[in-house]
Every structure is written in C-alpha cells, then in structure tokens.
Image (cartoon, rainbow over all chains, first blue to last red; front, side, top):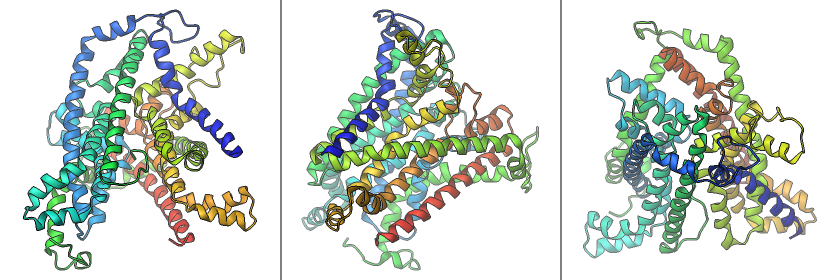
Length: 269
Length: 300
C-alpha cells in the first residue's frame, strides 16, 4: 500500500487542479470588488442581485431551456431507435450507419456548425431557436446512442420472448417490458443531452441568428470587465444546478444497473 | 421473431425480415443524420472545390483553394500552431491522467471506484465557457495567482510567463479535457486480468518491470483512445484561443470562422475546414493502426 500512498497523494493533487476554477468561482462571486484579484474585499450578494436584474439573461435562460429540453427529447428518441436497432437486429451496413450517427463525436463543432450554416443559408432558412435545436440534436444523439445502447444491451432477451409466448404483440412488449427496464437509461440520456445542449456554445453562436441563449450571453458579457463579477455569480448558480442534475443522473444510472442485475463499472462515458 | 442467424452474410437478399426490421427501426435516426450531417458535409466538400467571388460561389472544379491553403503562410502557420497546441495538450493530458486512472483502478476498493470517477467527472460538466474564462482570470497579469503571490510577498512584480500565451492555452485545454483521458485509460486498466501481474511477480520481475512489461502494454488501447478523444476536439477548439489568447493566438477553428463569415469566402473556408478534417483523419488512422498492432500483440 506504500506505492498507493504516493499515487493517492498525486491523485488528490490532480483533483485540486481539476477543481481549482470551480473553487475560485464562489470565492469571487461573493467578493465585494469589481476586480477579480486578491486580497478579498468582504462579503456581498450584490453580484447575484445584479445578475438577477438583467432581463436579457431571463430571455437567454428561457431560450436555452426551450432548446435544451427539445434537443434532449429529440436526441433521446433518435437514440432509442438507433440503440434498439443496433443491439437487437443484424443488418448489412450496420457499422457504416452507426459510424455516421456517431460521427459528430469526432468532428470539430466548428465544422459541423459551418456545414449546417452553409446549407441552411443556401436553403433560405431563417436562423432561430429552431436551427440551434437542429444542430444540438445532431451532437447530442451520439451520447444518447452510447448510453441507451448499454441499457438495451443488458436486457435479457428471454424476458421479451416470454412476453411473446404469453400473447403480447411486439408493440405491447416494448411498452410493458422493455421500456420500463431501459427507463433509467432513457432518463440519464435525457439529462446528459440536456446538459450538453445547455453548455454548447459554438452551434448556438453561429446558428442562433439574433436569438440569445445562455452560453452566447455569457460569452458576450466577457467583453465588459464590469460585468465579470455577475457572470461569476451566474457561474456559481450554474455549477450548483449541474451538480444537482448529475447527482440525479448518477442515481438513476445506478438504479438501472441494479434493476437489470448488472455490475457497476462506473462513469457515464 | 426468433433471431435469424447469418443475416449479415446475406447482403444480396436485401429484404430478409431481420435486416428489414433493423433498417425500419434505425431509419428515423439515419434519415436525420443523412439530411443534416452527410448532406451539409458533402456541401462543404463541394464548396471547397469551387471558386468564390463577390457574386457568390461559381460552379466549376478546381483545387486552387487547397493549393492556396497549403502554400499560404498564415494558413500553414495556424495549422502548425493548432497541431502543436493539440499535440502538447494531448501529451500533457495523457501523461498526467495515467497515474490517476491507475490509482483508481488498482488502489481504490471496488465499491468506491464509481464515487472517485464521479468526483473526477463533476468539473467537466460545469459550463465550459466559464471554466475557460476562469483560467484567464486565474492566470492573468493582474489575476488571482499574481495578486495572491504579490499579497503573500513571494514575488515582487507580476509574473508574465503565465499570462495569455500558448502555455496558458495548453494548460486551459489540458484542464478541460482531463476526464476524457482518465476514463478510457481507467476502462482498459480495469480489463487487465490481475493474475497476469501476480504471474509476472512470481516469475521474479520487479514491480516496475511488471508495470512496464505487462500493465502498460495491456493498457495501450485505453491510452490510444484517450489520445484520440483529446486530440480531435482540441485541434478544433474555438473558445480557448478566443478567450485565453485574446484573439491574438488564433487556431484553425478561428481561421475557419474568420474566412467563412468575416471575409465571406465560403470556398476558402470550406477548403480550410476540409484540410483540418483531413489532418484529424490522418492522425486518427495512424493511432487506430497502432491500436490494432497492440491488440494483435496481446492476442485478442
């Protein structure tokens, strides 16, 4: 265990590096100074009030939520189709089809957004929330497929066959047997897609036209040094929210593993 | 509805029931990605082979854009910077991440592993923009580190070596992609049969030699996956050069944006994008081939 001791020390050091920015965030969000530097000037909640008072932010949050919910639902639906098809059926060209679906994972987002932009503009489509959703569904679907494939993979085929033997149709079997068993996978796919969409910047920036979403709003605020503290306040709130969301996602993932009797291998990815 | 075996081999009889069900089920997703990913990418390829002028791209087939990108001084310099930055980020991230993955896999009790992984992934799920911006705040000339060290009397004037340079760029990206490197390495370490290690030590190898001759080669698929997962997105990163570099250290994604939107030269922009994709694809193929060699070496 002696070797583990040095490694443990290193790992904890690495975790501190990973958490450093997030620890700095609340420190200066509550600091009574416009300048983000030491020494600290005293406690204030002024930046939270200033953040809350900005009506552009309200609009941006509303847009972001609309986009994130729509993208999560659509990407999860597309993910269910693809994951079910790839785990249940054999068909020629499956690897190629799945490769195309998973492609956004390895493509720089700038290339995806420019490609979409070129085509949408050529077709005369007006940039709006809708065009952002189109792009976000594209980048969320691979994650949904990955999460849902492992959910569908751990299904016991004999449960399905038993349902057929008892006179259920494929549709009712899917609804009564399969769907409840993969539900935890569906929920974590929804949550992960929601988080990715909420955080995404490049597609939202280039495909959004005049519509402001949360990430684009944050990016815009960085240009004004006087707005930085309220952005740190906003960041603090966002960190809290995403930790809560992730804890829920992790809870459902573990429950899903327990339900299908699998072994916990840990992690979302 | 029983599984028809050997369906994959019967590509000629396209409509065997199982293949048909598979296609029917996957068709919504396939149609979506075809229309909104394959077609736009094909359009980019098309644009990159056209000549763009004030009145818009004209039809015709030419490699002039590619020649201009590959010989142009600015494009080549930016391409080289992107490659250098993302190669350094990849190297730093993978080297720093390996011991962490090793620790969680070999020295943490099985029931506590997922808690450790959860701890490692949490920072990754918080706003990317804000995290990048925080590094700017931390590393800046009047930033958190400089003001802190000045306040403690450790330095007498602000450090300039940590300000908005390529080093700061690399560090920010290495932070952003850390979990991407830890997870695949962890997964490959978890797969290693622990009895191999005991065998190595029973045969008189030291711990270090067992690690070098058994553990490291067996974990190479995870290392290669980590390299790809970090390298591919960092080479196309837009936000970090924009925020940390203050626009003075553009990388290839910033160049694509500037060419396509600010100069409104879609053909050139498309050629730069295609070139970036080709470089990424070439690097990926090299690493995938390496991976195949390692898999062969372990007899799997």
